[in-house]
Image (cartoon, rainbow, N blue to C red; front, side, top):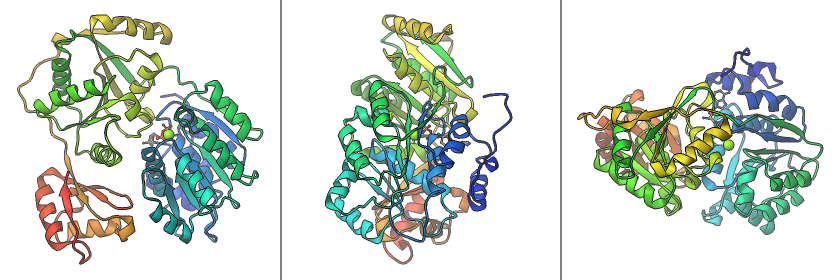
Length: 462
Ligand code: ADP
Ligand code: MG
């Protein structure tokens, strides 16, 4: 993205095992927000940081808080507040990934929509790191099940979004229960007045790190197609068949549009799933996991449902309809071409929507490249299928199931090779494992018959 030399993590005051983990995970250079914020955060300053979605904010605060946490006590030392359960889960996963050199580190997620009993039990065992949503965290503070006396670091992630969701009072109440000596880091994609006010209230002499989110990364190429309303979904199908991306995110403005687009794609043979506000928590979780595990190739989402979701290496974003709002368009397009990878962004625009694109182009100072939808070749080839399938095991962390157990059962009893097993994602009560499509049925039968670690388990294919 830039010509400047890469900013290496080993220029930071990080412990050797932490640097080794970063290297193992393939994080070779800091992203701009990491390079700008980490030296300040590691020096102990409070921080206001603004950077667009996908710029690597999670790793920025994760490294800062891990540097402060001691594992010789079980007291809560870092608290990350996130707007939704999905985001909290993602942040928790990201922290676990880079904290693997810390054997005694416990991380607990405390989110609403999950029974409180299990959380109470886990809290009794202690956890140095807490990631949660403001409502539930406050609930635990009120019950006395969570104490923040030893807190070293408070992170407000996606502060703008948390305020949009009405969490202002809860955040202020949580802040008041913190010792006051802790470091506070506030991250936000946008800085409306309300966020600034919260920052004034909760932060002490904060340093500011502001990265322009104005223009899409240069790596993203935007294409605009003029379509008729009647042919929009045909063009969508044709575009996806022609480019055959491993994964694409399609944006719609309403739930109904989401359902229609998804129906059209499924009818054309795609493994496509909708993501909108009418799904319950479990459906959302399953949809996101399938997309992330590459067992669903097209996710058709509304903006609200998709916001903040971190899916790396997204090749393609399609606006089935352009958003009337320029910022929203920007957020959508920013989902592809992350971390310097190249991405494609398409917008299907009916005559009555052309004005939106003109406004957007004026605001952001570019000249839209209009292309002719009839030039997209039609193909008879079957719709590209995702490489993986997701198996759902009805047991999780609470049942002491670990990724190694699942991998062991698949590679030994079921006879899959290590390469035929993909991502394994474990939640409190369920486990999702990706296996290659060709081996999915065999793996399913073997797990249902032989169980895992000698225990029988119920397994479904999603
Ligand atoms: P944000 O919170 O700013 O929207 P995330 O923290 O979710 O963005 O990061 C977006 C993606 O970038 C993630 O997939 C993450 O793994 C990846 N990423 C973060 N830091 C780096 C890095 N230094 N090098 C390469 N990829 C990175
Ligand atoms: Mg984030």
